[in-house]
Length: 349
Ligand code: GTQ
Image 1 (cartoon, rainbow, N blue to C red):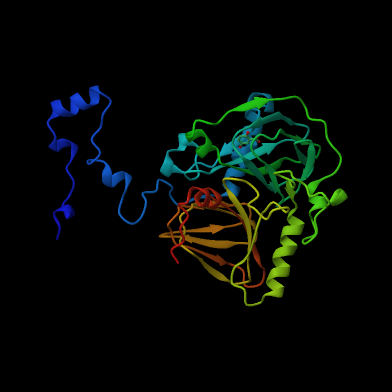
Image 2: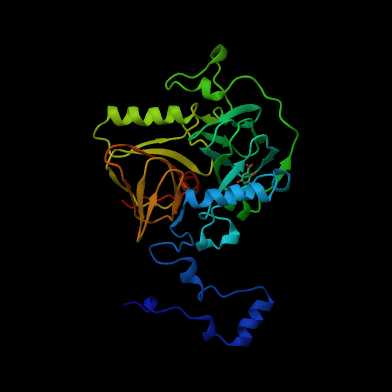
């Protein structure tokens, strides 16, 4: 045993007038807090395994529609907040923000742009659209729509029933970096064409006069019909494949669709259990179709359609399809692109 194995000195071990003299100079001794900021082996995580039921949340969201007109809300959203961080922080994890947004028929959420990146996962309803950078993206159940950093976006609704979608933003991180702000703009002029049409077929990309697109975000809408078909084809082609998963990418470069958060769709075969590797980033699970059990360390949640839960990083997660007849489809968001760029990404199994 070396003498460095002993417990570190505490703040109370120091003379109060010494601590006061330090504080008066904006100085703090490290050793009483060293273990808290650099714990052994596993990081301290505020993120708690947390579950949000859509069935419970939906009437409260519809009530918000009655209580608060869109003009008084700009974005009518109930935030899915992780109690581990404190609800007022509006965080699902260290870097992820989740919100359920309601748009009623005829409403319009005005054009703005901001530094955080966002995506929308459409939960329910038909007839809404988001115009992103001049491209009008129809919103149908399961579609993923990107509104990346700096791109103008506005939401409208020409249908007859309420539309609900899940917002996933890297707002907590961008806010923490003191880099979060927005600008309001005018209604956008819609341009013809859509990335979703141009990049739907894998293996070929548009090359007008041999030129590849140099847009950072060529594809803004990922229709669920295409993603679902890709998962089913993958499962059928590779019957032995355990993890039937696709990643939402930039179709020109193969890079993650956005810079900070990663987005994935996963299919569980009928009755399948899938043990995910223990990795550094936190993960969000949102059930698109079917019913799944999500076990996160000692917690266990049953996800029905449109339910959402989150898992902290460095935690064992097991997914199980509760149906022995139908596949289950899950949308996932995580902090992998961020961890990889920062060089702190880790997988322990
Ligand atoms: O729809 O632009 O949930 O700006 C939070 C901030 C949604 C949006 C949110 C936003 C939006």
